[in-house]
Image 1: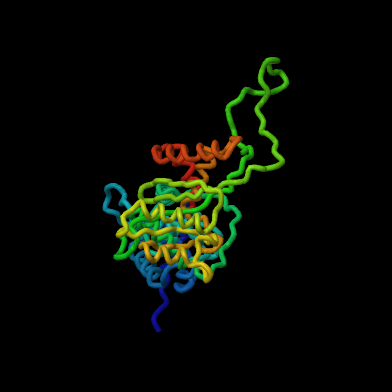
Image 2: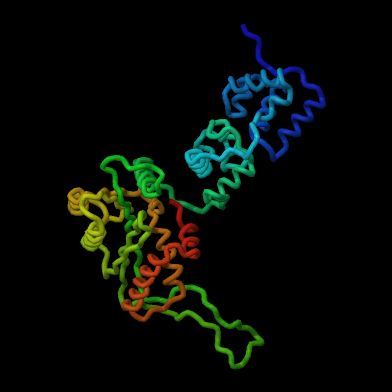
Length: 377
């Protein structure tokens, strides 16, 4: 039986040095991991157990111990060739971002959330990167638009086809974002249609510039503006049929008195007419009944099959995957908050003029900020 691999005898000074490296929160993750393996071996832990604790392979642990026995502490430090730090490739950055947005439990780890140390350690152990410091990881995530946020309540989808539907929607987004090349017969254009409403005539909460009120205000000063109180809505409602063209970054919208399958079908035909028939188009839709093909009414599905259109449905209770939801947040923020329209014609005119402004100022800083904050897909 081969002799068990373990680190050589460690004196007190070397033990304290190893402990300082392990407890230090900065520096190379590779050095930290190697020092941890050596320290655990010095404490009598077998190679198999060390591999289990450090989430790596037993062969990797044996290599570290053999190198330390031969080269002492020099074996703990990566041997770089100098020069500027290596720039991470686009696939590496994409994989780092994907893992950071996932849950540690999905990878078999007993943690509820990632810390920079745990995430960097896992990335090195999985071979995603050879080495990455905690500060370098933080900067990379910030550049990719990923931040450490408080978790909010969420309704979990119980759709049995959740993974398949979500993967298809994300693949369509990757095509329009230029991350993957479309294969033959895959859509070249992706629309995100949905309905916004009901649009009723009522005062919407909002903010505006006004003079300060208070006990010592001037006698002639106007009172602080207040919202009109409403108890009835006798003027009916309207609905906005909207679609977001991901490739052109344009928003389209039609206001209708009702939302049902016929009106939705009319809007789809309008969107189809924006591109030549030979260009394949995909619609990312939620599971609102007028969007679906049923046994009683298959008009939407039949029309899509006959007009070179793919209907990609989000999983149940996962309409947040539709990127138009963030555009609706911006519409509410810029156009509806703080308004009290007297007629539907006035309200509809303001919404139409906003869509025109939004398409002409798609690069507006505040607009992009509101959309980016609301966008989760």
